[in-house]
Length: 207
Image (tube, rainbow, N blue to C red):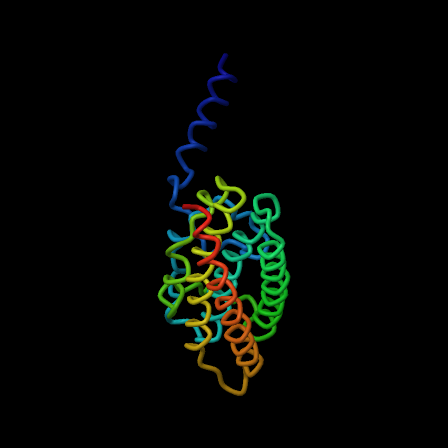
């Protein structure tokens, strides 16, 4: 009986020591591997002291989290859309942004070693890109309703990434980042125009 009471007391202390629901520090997540499908990205918080970190490090950590948000949305398309156009776009987003995440992780290790997380929600474009994300809503939709909502969420998300890329300040030590930002602006601008073209037609079929 005493042993049972001791085990019960330890279990209760363990529960009490856990952080309250919703209080997780998203800046410490590995955004390249975490399962974020039902995560509320709009409520992510900045890493402690992120604004004081090197600008390039802020960009890397913040863009990795931003990219992961797009990947989370795009992965839903595989089982919810019936359109080849949406599937192809989503597959391209997943492949391209996973590749870019891998490069940014490589550069982060090379340039900043084991530096503390520097995810900055106030980095220009970050809140804009995350504000409209609702993967729970997306996960509840299928067929044309999914396609329309997917585009409505992905367009502002892409616009946020473009704003972030334009706000990047680089020097000769991090020249690779400028090439990445140029690629983000070019690729995601083209995808936005493509999605806007689909949206008018597909929205009409839901009325």
